[in-house]
Length: 243
Image (cartoon, rainbow, N blue to C red; front, side):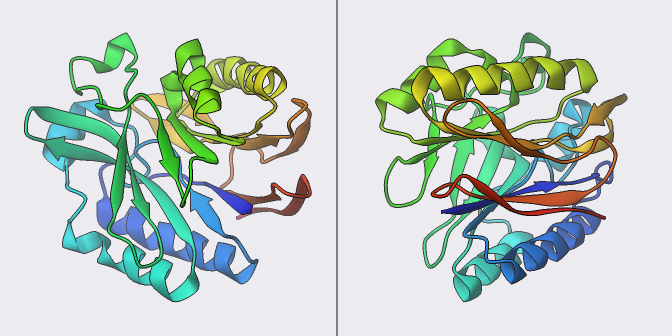
């Protein structure tokens, strides 16, 4: 499995502009043989909790049909961050577009206390993608909750992918934690972050991948958009590029 991390610089609240940038990065990933591509937390809107009510969408939003079409035509799974409206509130979610399948949604289960004024928790404790549970998904704060990674491991995951929006300090802690998860559970771990301003602070990029021993395989810089493509089977970095 060749997983691609797409490090983006979101345009605050502009779904149209961010969609266009997502598609350009997806095309580049496809050209380099990616099986999956994952984007940062709330990548379609930027991480802007105060705007979540205004920007909240649904999995069936017609604006996102282009992602399903791209997935079908190129046999690639795509994970994109968005605030998704449910009956009882708004979730921080990953929209999962997979070839010739209905769109799925993984909603963040473990919220940071600062998020509770804007969002509700998702109903499942961990997300997966693919025909089995081999690839587990996390959204930002969840990676710091021991029960989350443990649940992924117990479900049979061999790869743990976290979609985040983190500052430099947050990334330092997250990198240490992702390496620890890899060592503890023998899972390859990947983390995709954004760059630029989000919710009034600067996100630090450094999207990264670690092997099953917790050794860093590759990392992007702290200020550029770019792609990091990793072959999980061989534990090799196939592409590391910034724009």
